[in-house]
Amino acid sequence: MSNNPLNLEDILTDRATEDDLLEVPLTVRVFQIFFSVALIGIFIIVVQVVNIGFIDHTLYKKSALANITHAKSEPAPRGIIKDRFGNPLVRNEPAFRAFLSLRGFPKSSEERYAVLGKLSEILEKERSELVAVIEGHDWRLGRLLLSDNLSHNTLVALTSQEIPGLEIEPGFSRVHVAQFAFSHVLGYTGLVTESDLKDTDPFCFGR
Image (cartoon, rainbow, N blue to C red; front, side):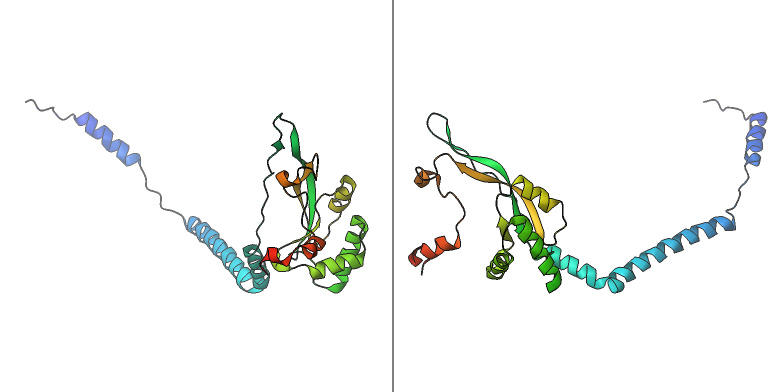
């Protein structure tokens, strides 16, 4: 096994290369910039914590509680029923529905009066009628349905104004070719009204 002889020229060359490397320490300015940026970040975090925890605590608390109880459901369109020849007996047509929600409904009586005035004018209903419907609604069941099939002009009028508490959602309406002839097969032709409940035998409700 042969040993490679050491070359003096190579040793001196490596030594010269090492001597060219000079360690430069970090300046004080670098540390000052680092600590300044860190202090600014900590200050922003502290300000946000104080803002959320003390200054705007009530606002964020109300928003959080409102979001907890807020649930939005979007019903799926019902199926199309056809006869044996493939002709539809009932179909779905696009429709827009208007709801009144307590989430954005004003608290003061003056603002409520103004909102009811706008709704009365656009929906072409008496203000007293709207008040009676609102007072008679069980709000534990959720929003109040104002209209289940808005016309185009009514939809434009409602969406062009900012009415607190009003929510408009796309939906569908059920269109029957023969409403009463096939009612025993196709089911109901509309939502149950208060007069329908009065005319219904109480035995149907388990009374």
